[in-house]
Amino acid sequence: MTPAQGSAWRTSAVRGGLGVLLVAAFFGLSQTSPGLRVTFQTPFTYSSPGELYLWLGHTLLLVPAGALLGLALMPAVSAPLAGLWRRVEAMDARERRAALLLLGGAAFVVARLGRFFFLRDFPVTDDEVSARFGGQVLASGHVLTPLLNPPLAQPGLFLYARDGLVSSFEWLGLQATWALSEWTGTGSLVFSLVAAVPVMTVAWVATRRLGPAWGGVAAALVLVSPMAAMLSMTTHGHLLSRAALAVAVVAFLRAEERGVRGWAVLGLVSGVAFLCRPFESLFFLAPFYLDLLWRMARRQLAAGPCVGGLALGWLLPVVAFLAFNHAVTGDALLPARVSMYTFPAQLTEQDGTLLQRFGANTSYNALMLAVWFLGPLGVALVALGAAWDRLTVLLSLAVLSLLGLGLFHDNHGIHAVGPIHYSECAPALALVAVHGLKRAVDFVRRASVSARPLLLATGGALAVGLGIFDTHHALALREQSAIHEAVATYLRDAGLGRAVVLAPQYQVVWKRVPEFRRVGSWVLEWPPPPPDASDDVLVLHDGPGHFEKLRERFPDRRFFRLKPGRAPEPWRIVPAETSAADAAPVPPGYPAPVPSAKQAAP
Image (cartoon, rainbow, N blue to C red; front, side, top):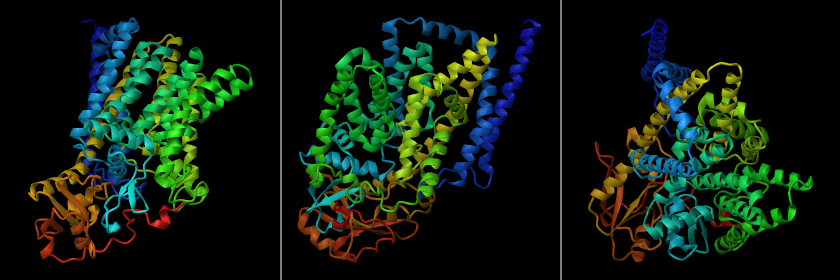
């Protein structure tokens, strides 16, 4: 070993030691008063002190630790990584397609493993429960199913009721996806497949613009992004709109060269995103469509094929949207999702002032994007890449436009899986960020300096910092999913056979366990019974007179009540005939399980 080599290894050892020390310091924060405990509590904008320590520790300890560890590995990995980079850049078309499929397969596997290990195949929010119920209704060949009698026995949140019928108030795209899952008996599999789409589209776009190696980097940014990784484990409609809008970016890039057919594809995938999350999709797409109008006005783009193709592509989604609304609410222009609010003057029941919406919605979610996309490095990379060219400007404006939507409502959204109302931003930000990293590398190279330290420091900061962030938060999600597994196991192991269990609201039940109450969860209600009532055990709301009326509806089932247990057991199940008829009162301020007739009216 030459003296220069020996000096390089000593420097690497020092860097590595400092990096390990900073990682240890991060985990040492668990011994502080707040610790690093992530909990899931109301209201939407609440973060536990431990979660805030996680964010702060990630920024100030893990990011520099990862950079130091990346630099420490430079003597050992520089040559192999440089060779791998050259090999990837030299891939032919067939190899690129295979690599793209491999990336998609990896994203699917990660999402699937995360679904079963961290979430234990349980929902994270009541939205998912409601959407699955809507899919079950659609799979039965109807858009609404009979409401239980008495109506207050019907469990579930985010439902829509009209004329004695009920279903989910979720958007058609999400319900239709769940209907496909019900028809095929594949459960959450479809959502895990959809989770792979943004990884593949981002890789394709970056490869086309910057080269295959940069395409791999862009895909990696999506895979390690906490907001992308956490959402990919769920069955939220945001997965669908995120994927559809990512495909829309691809269609936008290819539309002009393919004529009417290309514009029709852009219109179709835009419409699919609209069916999943209309407002968010329109605000995200607005800069792209305004760009098309600007180019047509300046005669840079042929208006006929563009407008005709887009209209053709949008036709089917719009017709489906209107027909579904008419079938559910009786008004083609009134979706069930907004039927209980005054639209468009008021999008939520209790809109705050413009200043409140700016602070607690737009500003808050801008902060959440900074934390949950890639952390502080992500902010820097996005800032560097935003003005690369027209596409990165449009992607940046799409994110800003979506943040602007927050000025019109006060539903701030949870951040249990990142800023959920801004999930569609992750692929766009990844594309902007990879251009920012490319710009930084080009700047260093123009200065006749090796770019390897920059790349290794950045890679180390992202891999170590976000790897620990992702794992830590995912373990917190696993902790809250233990609540639902415990309740489900208790009911399953009770050996009730074909039965109806009359119970308080779900959150009242699991909050009987002090540890569950401390962890918290955003699943607050029992799932509605499937339309055919095929489940062996149906859990319905208890209340005055519910037992007598429900016994007429389910004469072939045994009836039980779920009641508070005697220490140390949190619950007990007793025959309904020998227990008190009245249920515990509804907690003050808790929403009704189904909108009232007044709420459901337009």
